[in-house]
Image 1 (cartoon, helix red, strand yellow):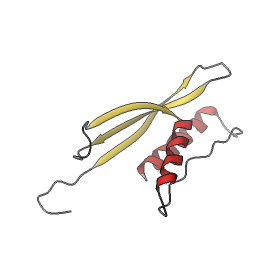
Image 2 (spheres, helix red, strand yellow):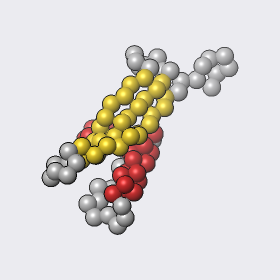
Image 3 (cartoon, helix red, strand yellow):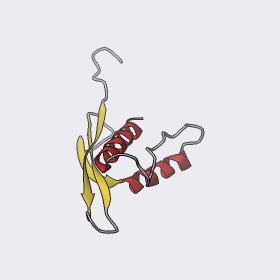
Length: 103
């Protein structure tokens, strides 16, 4: 950091998981992604979108295509078999998606 020059900060949060189409064969969970930044590279200083797991998978693939030798962070597993409650699985996945975006 340079004295007197404000440091650029970007905060990202994965929150508010919601089950969509609950009870149907095509139900899924999406998450609210909230971004706040003071970076001049961003026009909007805050943004908020909802995304589902497969959109994170797509993002990771795009990053891998362009990363060269830079390692791309892992996503939390896509386990269809999980011992424990659905709420617990959703929370663990939320935490994993948060860590992925932070890295």
